[in-house]
Amino acid sequence: MVVRIRLARFGNKHQPFYNIVVAQARSARNSKPLEVIGTYNPIPQRPTNLSDEEARSARPYKEVSLDRSRAKYWIGVGAQPSDGVWRLLSLAGIGDGRTKTKN
Image 1: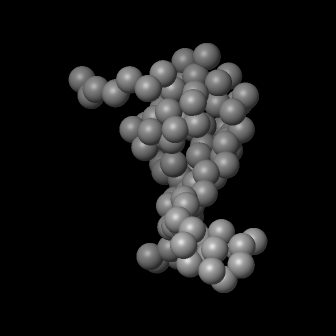
Image 2: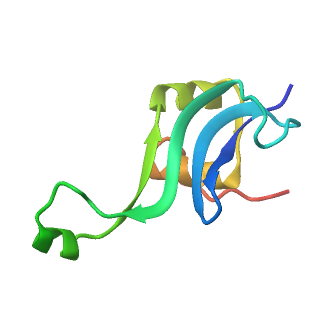
């Protein structure tokens, strides 16, 4: 039983939104996952709690929310992250930062 941590796409056309899910490797992308461990919004958002001047100069950010303890658990039991999730995990400090190579 190969388990992967991958992205499941939601949202409208040109407005993607992803759930970070743990699922069987052979299941379809949007099939029911074993567990949802986070979300990822790749569209840059500007901070909303700033004044008008500060909001214009603030850098937009991509929102990532992740349950770090569950991600560490699934990696510990042998789940394999996809390339996109590997990048997100390394940004969150869970991955070891090395580049993943395809065999």
